[in-house]
Length: 352
Image 1 (cartoon, rainbow, N blue to C red):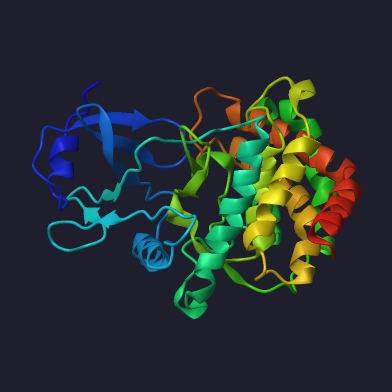
Image 2 (image 1 turned 60 degrees about the vertical axis):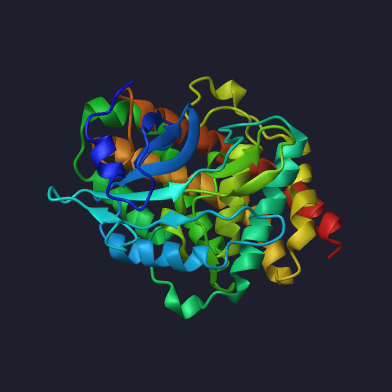
C-alpha cells in the first residue's frame, strides 16, 4: 500500500537515500506508526505523534531522549532515535504535525495477548530490567509530559464531568459500567498506596508495547516511550498484568471469555525476580493492588471517552470504547476476586 508524502517526510531524517517502502502498524490507539522497509525488511519506525493526545511534545521527547541514554545493557536491546537533518529529535512540518524516527529491531514481534508462560516470564523479566536500567537516570530531570495521567482522583472527576451532559443513547447501554465505576472509584482511592517512591516509569506497559524475538521468545525491550515520566512501579506492573493474565482482547465483547490465568501470573512473577533487587518490600507488597487499579483506571478512561464522544482513543466502531470498558471492568472484578491469591503468590515467590 502506498502512503503519499511519507517518502518526503522520511527524507528529512538522517538516513541513507534508498528506495523505502512503508507499512502501517495498526496496533496502537494513539499515534500513526509505519515500518520503513528496505526490500521488505523493517529498518526504521516512522511515527506521527498525536498532538491532540500529547500537547507537550518537547517535554515528551526530552524524557524519551534522556531515557534512551540509559536503556541499554545486558538483557535489553537498545533503540536509537534518528535525528532530523537539522539535528533535532523530531520533525515539525509546516502544518504543525510532528514526526519522529527510530531504529527498528529485526526479527521482533509484539503480542496483544498470549497464553505462553515463556512470554509471561519474559514480560516480568524485561519489565524489571527496564526499571533497573533507569535507576541511574536523574529523576529530577524527567517532567510530566501528561499531567494526571494515572491520577485516579483526576480521572474520576473527568468521569463525573462526562456524566453531567447526559445522552440517553450512550448512558443507557453503559448503566452497569457507570454503577461499577461509582462503586469502586472511592474504594480504590482510599486504598491507593501513595506513600510509595516515585520512579521513572514507562506508564503504558501493555503487552503489545514489549518486543520479543520471533525465534526464542526472548523479550528485547519496551517500545512506545511517549509516556516515560515519573510514576510508581505498581502502575507498570498492573498495566502489564491486565494484558498478560487476561488472554482475551481488550475489547472482547463476550465477557465470559475474560479470564485470569494463574499460570501467566506466576510466570510473570518468576521473571521479575531476576532484576528486582532495587524494589522495596512495600512496593512488592503493592503489586496486587496495581493489578486491580490499572484495569479499573483504563476501564474508567474508556468509559469516560465513550460518554464524551470518543475524542481520545481511536475507535473502529461506535461502541468500541464501551466494549473496552466492560472488558476491563470484568478483569478488574477478577483481580478483586484473586487479590488474596496474588498477595500470597507474591509473598511466596519473593520470599518476603
